[in-house]
Length: 227
Image (cartoon, rainbow, N blue to C red; front, side, top):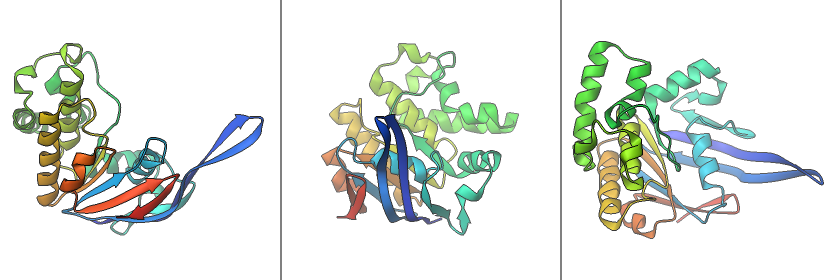
């Protein structure tokens, strides 16, 4: 499934002295291809995360559309869009988003706990353990998030985004909180996931990520350019 954005933009209204219209993302066209790792680099505040959130169906654009194949996701109502995201999209957020009362295994399988049968749960647990092994956190299966380091929480979040084997993974600074060894580990896993047919879109300022990308873009002051 190819994801295409056409004339996509986002403006915010700030309340201050008068009305201040802030353009976070200027009109943008971009395509994210299956089987490719697409990298978007830029400084903090350049609009990268805003663009990612629009592409992932998490933030409605001011103008333009986001097409997944032939479907414009922003024509869907909230329930249908949530269902579409659950079935097709995995998101690795920039911050830490966990349910503190659930174990690592339960956090990774959270979407199946909310929507899924007993058979789904069993299959999810099997795949989650495989992912935890790959990310080096298998021994933390029954720990609560409060017992984990920042880097361990990051790897748990990446596993959670991958648990449903989505068509596309959106990764917002996926290697923040990671040391050099685990940065390389995560970048290799994302690269291999793309090579397996998934579309991977990664936002980062990590220069080491450049060598893993199939397609590169840069962003500055809300404008995107191919590199």
